[in-house]
Amino acid sequence: MIAVTNITKTFGSHTAVDNVSFTVKEGENIVFLGTSGCGKTTLLKMINRLLEPDSGEITIDGRPIRQQRPEDLRRSIGYVFQNNGLFPHYTIEENIAIVPRLLGWDKEKISRRVTGLMEKLHLPPDQYGASLPAQLSGGQQQRVGIARALAAGPPILLMDEPFGALDPITRAAVKKDFKELDELKSTTIILVTHDVQEAFELADRIFLMDKGRVVQEGTPDQLLFEPAADYVRTFFEEQRFALEASRIAAGDYPALIRAFDHFKNRQR
Image 1 (cartoon, rainbow, N blue to C red):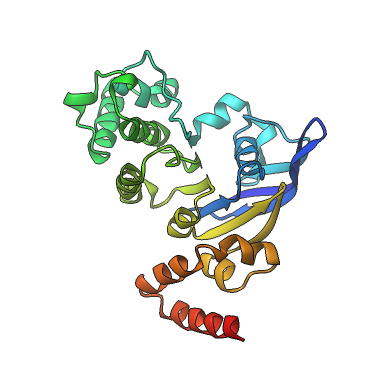
Image 2 (spheres, rainbow, N blue to C red; image 1 turned 45 degrees about the horizontal axis):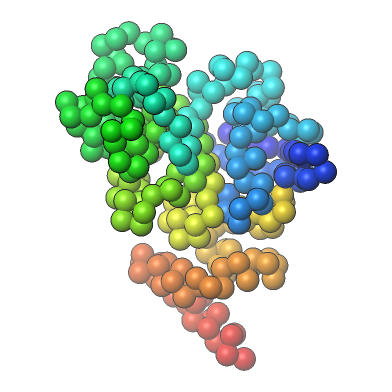
């Protein structure tokens, strides 16, 4: 379990994250949602010590992360960057194999793991294994980034706008393949996005942020149908019809009732 307690981070006079607390259960998928500059990426980076908080504490399975060496911590946490973050002079196979090599896996085990992930993510090893990142499309590079983050089988996966730089068609394809990975069944995922539809599609719980604070936390339905503040209601209003329709289309019949009640209330 991940526990974040009273975390604050400032940059000069700007408070990027303001006294935020939350817990994430093992195997849970949570999404930090909000506009640019609301603090969600800063929060993500503090979980694997790319940034250090000014105050507060983060623990993983009861152990404070500040008691671990940053490099050891990061080897146990997968991280998917928006711009993929691949090493340009490493081949695709070498990029994916980085963490297993650092952990001392033998060559045969690394080869099996790299090959398996490339095949699952529709990157045939014989076609792309010896390629450099610049020779791949944006969508293919992001698939490599996902494979690299999962290569060592980390129990935690952090994802910072992982599909944000892709065009809509490529984004849908990469996201579909990502969701079908059996490696994710027991992985705890914390994802940052400003895409409302993406948050509703991937999250068990959503944390909506504004100005460094969590305005509301809950399931997608709770945020949509039970907004705790005017900001929450306004944030989802533009896409409300599509969000309600997607919940109903997924067979969520209680959502149909809530949507109907919400519609009646808007008519009053």
